Image (cartoon, rainbow, N blue to C red):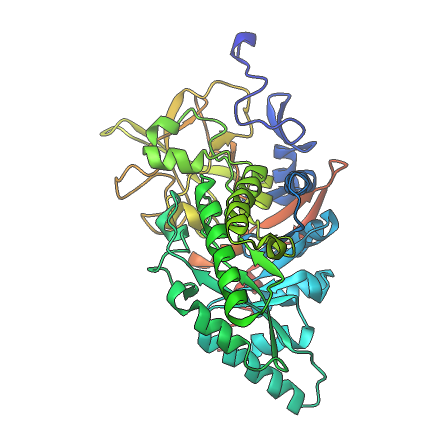
Length: 478
C-alpha cells in the first residue's frame, strides 16, 4: 500500500472517538482488532465518553433557552445496565416503556421522581409497579387507561400500601407528519398511539374527577424518531400549548409540564460516499443534522407568540419542558464489529460475496426498516474504499443481507470496501448503538454477542457477556 493511498481522517471518523491508528479502527483509545481477539465476534462496542458527550450537547442546548428543561433518556433505545448507569452519571432522567425497563431504571439507581413511563398496553402489574414506586409521571395512552391507574391506586391501598395519588400525563396524537420513516412516525391518527384532539377535553375532565387517586401533571406528544426538520417539533409544542390553555380556561387546572417526546436525529451519513445510492427522502432523513438548540428555540418561539396573543405568558412561564432523547444519546456511541467468515464469487453476475457473523438477529432495523449503517473495514480502515461487495449475514434466511432484497433501492446494492477482503477481516457497522442490542433475538439458535464499554481511560469493560449454548435453553421446559 502506497503512502498516497492512506486516508488518515476518513469522513466517518470522529476525533477522540472513531479514529484511524496504525491503519486500523480505534474506538475511544481501544484497538478494534484487539477487542475482537479478546471478546470474540460479533461484538457490540460502546463509548462512555461519546455517550456523555452526546448528553452534554443536549444540556448545552437547554442552557440556550429561558425555560426549565428535563431530559429523560428513552431507555427502549438501549437499556443495558451499564449504558443506563452512564446516562445516570451524566445527570439526566429516564423514560421507560415496560415494567422491565422500570425495574432496570430503579436497579441502576434512578430515583422514582426521575422516571416517566410510556406505553400503549400497560398491564395491571406494570401500572401497580409504577404507582407503588411513586414515579414522576405515568403517560396514559387513552381515556380508558385513566381508569386503570385509578384502579391500581385503589388496589394497592386496599392491600395496605400507602401510595400517593398517581401522577399522570396525557399522551396526545395531533396528526403531525414528519419526513421520517413511516414506521417511526407516532403523531398520526393512523398510528396506535395517544388520545386524539377531539377527546382531549373529555380526557382531562375525566382525569380531574378523582384527585385523591390521580393528579394530572402534564401533557405529552412524540412526533416520531429521526425527525429531520424543526417544524414538526414546533407544531407539536404549539398544539400542546394550546391544549394546555384550553384546559386551564375550561377547568382552571394548571399543568406542570409539556413533554415534547424524542425524535432528535442522528447523522448516519457523515460518510456520504454511498449516499447517492439512497432515495432522496432517505438521504434527507438519515443525513439529518438538526441541533437540539434549534428544536427548543423554535418550539418556544411559536408558543410564546400564542401565549402573548392569549395574554397567557404567565402560564407558559410555569411550564417545564420534557424531552425523551434516545437515538441521539446512544446511536453513534455504539458500533458492531463483525468478522468475514466466508467469501464466494458469482461468475454469472460478477459479484463478490462477503458472509459475516452479524445478521439481522442483532441488527433488526436493517431488515425491518432497511436502515443504513455505514460499513467500514476495521482491519484496513485507512485504505481506499473502491471495491464493490455483496454483504450478507449468517442466518438461514434470504433476507439476511446488507442490501434491499426487495429491490426498492432503500439500501445500496453493494458496499464499498478495500480491495481483496478475505475471511478473517474485521468489519464495523457504525452508528448502531440504538435499537440493535435492545432488539436482539436467538434466531437459528445463535448465541447473542457480548458488549463492551470503552471507558474514558481507553480500557474496555465487559457490559454484557456472550451467550453460551446453555443460555439458549435456559427457559425451555421439556
